[in-house]
Length: 443
Image (cartoon, rainbow, N blue to C red):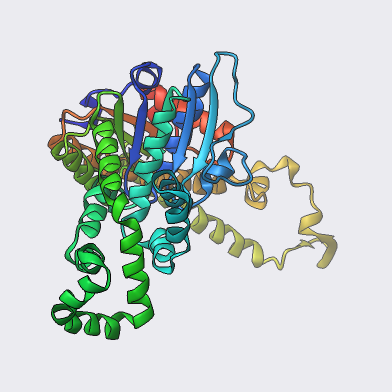
């Protein structure tokens, strides 16, 4: 089964459906995932929906393309959107630490929250602990959905395979919070103050001594203080994460896998498709970006190369003949001899009127038929290279379709340049919506 025969992904129907409340764009790095998320946001807003785009990608191209100076943890309205259909667009970038702080402030009393926020271990954890970014992305998504302020939330996940850490984050962070180390650190406080420490002192002395050497005494103390302060909140982490995970599995959520027509990108896309299926996440389809096309696809690479070689042979022959003519003329030393008097005429051969001699004009003119044939041969070779790229892309797409023939596909014809403004995002949105032979033929 070829990609052209795969089911068509109707992105407009997806965006227009009021039951669609969350769209998650995932995929490997460098395939236009952020641009796709932004383009979908612009198109949905201009078709009448109230949209917020949340990017987790540390690259700040989303803000640039939407004409916003900077994005932060607060949704910012995007100006320049056509609101005649009643829609509007907001955009934001996940601030991992600020989202973590908001969670602490919402689930702890003022005194406990202040102690947690000031704790050095917490500050390190909230700024860069493995899995924290993805967990906080889920937390922010849950917050946005709970506010019920937008019709549609579009999430741009981090690049590379770690994008699906988005799904693993609750389990990973929960495992850390429920882990043996945290339980050991909490044990003295749970047994009861100094008495508890006495009871556990013999059993823990060797462990804490080793940890002190490994982590440093102050860091161990910070971790113990953090664990004690966070103890009452651990259940809240798991509860919220589980709720957001169920939200991702709900019928109102749609996952879009974004890829390029390249072997590595489509291999990653296949991994995403299989993983989403294993986790029972609702996959809407595949967005295939930067698909190349040609307005002269009927001219194969082989025929183009053969024609280029034929023109090159003719050019070589013409050059040989021209060189022969030049050698004959050089015998006259490029001057005209007056045989009657035996004197050399002072007129140069270049001073003669060559306009009456079309052959001489063609040889002297840089824009001769030979030069035109060289240009044509070069264009034919470029076309052959383009057709070879198209054939390679088609083979790659066909391999994906053979494995996942049920996955709907939307192909986006390659644009001539980078997308850096709303006009470019609209162009991407239009190409997403128009899935015809003409769109694939657009270079």
